[in-house]
Image (cartoon, rainbow, N blue to C red; front, side, top):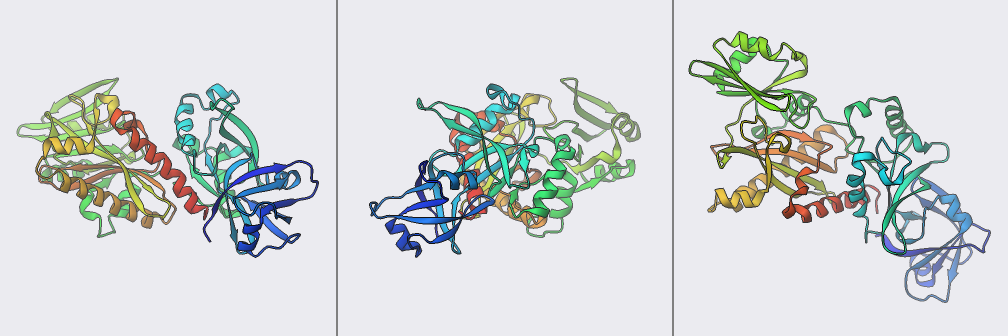
Length: 457
């Protein structure tokens, strides 16, 4: 059955584990006064007495006694959902975000990421959920409890961090911040125990690497036309062969992000040009011989950590190439939807479209309207459809829960659509644009909705 939003409050004067329900809910769920039933919250459950409140013939006020509140590790009263699932009354959903680097200072709980997580948790407003942060070392596996950080309002409506003991949640969102943090023993131990000892669904587990994405998608005929030709560990012969096929190539770190380490190689009429960013500046050099260019590139870079990728002749805006960051989410119905499509225009002389290298962001539809006034609707729909198809293929290829993706998409000079990169922990810098604030709100709201879906609420 569907879950019901109720107003949860606590009774402090009864010393038994009991739940007080309005008469109409008792009738609806087939519960009798003084029945003993199982009640759960997250991964905790307890047997408790049903007490029918005959004074409340309508409304959805549910009360728990203090012993039951403690047994279920329910953090606070307020609007929450309840459902009768196979004879168990479930209270929730309880949604956890697992991350690292949490401090004890509530003013700077996560350092530079504090504002990011505050905005994430603000999406709980009006949804009737328990939504919190915790780190892997704050779990008590024996009691199925965690020390979670909640963002709660005071009487003046101002939000602040509060730490509460709560149940291991119904569903989890993985926001471990980096591959280095992912590799730490406490994070690895947490994820192994989560998978082997609990049934808590977690989405966006771990990080993608570019080669792994390419390998999986290259075997899926429904999306191969969006994937540039890519190879691992480029040799000189491979570089020469690829430049015979394409006038431009990119060399990319297989585990890179934010455009760091990307090298552009172009075939010229009288030689070859290499371009990259170094020391905060754009660098370009021409070579008569490809072997000299190859040695120059890999004098400080490890070949085995790099991919070679077909270069795409991108459409341009004011003379600068651009691509699109397409942010996708699963919704409450477990369907992929696009929450945002933002165009990223490259900085002058930059080999990437990242803002940190001089690029800038424009709402995707606005750019398409400017450049393609007669067919912008068609192009936008093509990019959205391709992005959803790619997201569906990614989820199938990885056989795991994916609730959020950031895809780097592009249109070439022939009007064909390409995908360069897929991110399982997409950044949110595009949402800083004034005209993408509503997309930001939608994106954060969809994270809660998909978490509710995984929690079966």
